[in-house]
Length: 164
Image (tube, rainbow, N blue to C red):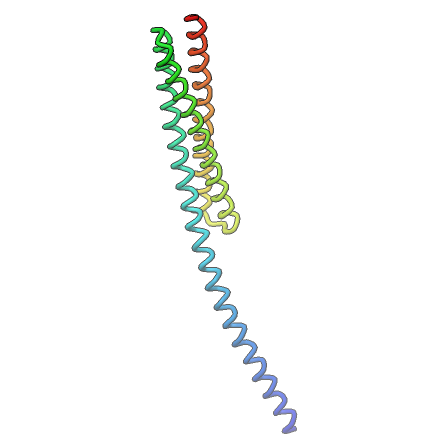
């Protein structure tokens, strides 16, 4: 009986030790999870902010492209071909900037979506949605900027042909 009681105590001590080790392991895993969750949250916030800023850049590039296209049209009307060419080149550069900004918005939006996929929190879902909307706006602005760039270049080409 005494031997069996000693064996039971040994098993109890072994189980108690195992439970303590499991608790310690859980604490370590929980701390790492909390740290990773915090990092993902910050990544999501930063990615959403980057998408919004890239969207603003694309929209401003679109405005610059619009003004360059107007300048190209005006210069072509007055037969100032060199100025029209410069404006058309500026419109092209602005359109390229808008496309790059749209690509940046898309990348940031993808990063936000990836972070949200790791942790489903309502606030992060909202940020990811905002990043996606910013990407759409940036892409729309880039597409319009490209159209205006083509128009400006067509006007310059027409003015050049009329001047020849």
